[in-house]
Length: 176
Image (cartoon, rainbow, N blue to C red):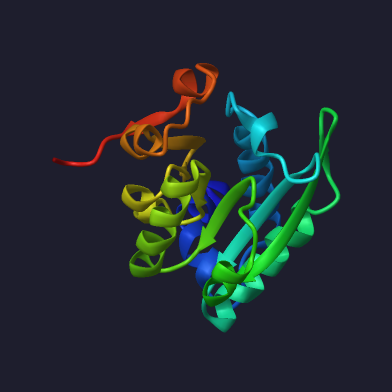
């Protein structure tokens, strides 16, 4: 019962003052696996590595972004090294295009980041499943962890993921 209750409180814990580091490790590990389901991942590498920007705006979001970057940085997926950075939202225009974006942002700010991701044909993940309408992938965490894929945003960004994700994911479609 405690396990179920803790999974239901995950989004709140993640964005509260004391986020759950272990849970974040699990979420980040799943994002890492999904990144490499992009058919064009090798074309999006930066200096032969997966460059990941975890984007934040507030001090609280910065703590989460820095923890996520710490978890991802230096890992390897198959033969591809990962370099992760916590990047302030207002500093994005001064940086090169990464392989992928992970957002630790409010819905208003993630909408702006989505425009950048779509324009550059890059995946955009969000830790907050409530922001899936403005991202491409998130995670729903309850009794089990289920990826949520926004197929409309993937299509807009011209990103094709390997079909295995669609066998386990919940598909989100924007209301037209």
